Length: 304
Image (cartoon, rainbow, N blue to C red; front, top):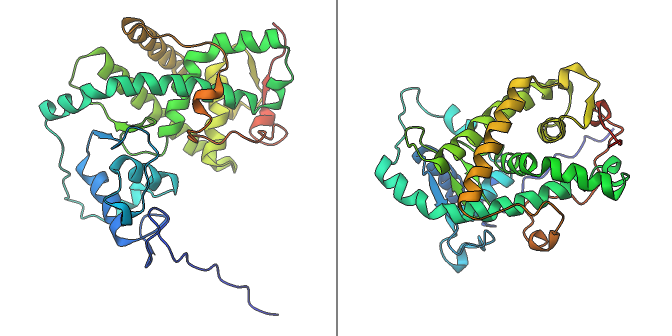
């Protein structure tokens, strides 16, 4: 019997397309992109904006130095793992950090990006709901009712999903931001609360992976019952969340609504996918297989 063929190592960097790649942190990348990823993990740059604000810059180095946000975002998209960076460091290594003053000046410019991103995340949440066959089978009146009850929580959960595998930061559509816990300001506290909840949901999702599901399947199972706690029935007790997680999310919602009202911004509360058609931040183009674990253990109720 012929021996099975070994999987061929990619010849080009998954980030920028350069040749001569190796696998240091979970993806096949060139030395330049490997060093870039390591540097950004260790230096803890709290604010990394997109050079042109689009979040879709070219990463081909022939056209100049790649945008830091788009390059780092691609690092996470190809599944580079920040934990592998730390596993290869001496135990007494100390990271550099920004000063509070420098951090605050950088951060103040990101509030508009945050508000824009919330509008995108709201629409992506509706996209995700539409990937559930049981949701699409509901009456239009019932679907509208569910959207109006869940849009704020769903928006936050979409932002957490976008940032789930990102180290210490939240990933917006065009910038990375992080929060220093000793800065007392509603916007910064809001980011801190979202980051803290992201860490908690990450731990739950990792625990659920022991059941054989992928990390994103686990988070998807959590997302449905977090966004619509009164509208789903969870048959598997291992998937159920305690009240503390719902209370934490509601605290974020209350603060988020207060912050948005102070900036005269409101959620749409209805589908309007035009703004996200070309963003490609999530792929919800196919149905979620509700007949398979974990979604076969979570029932979306159809009555009003």
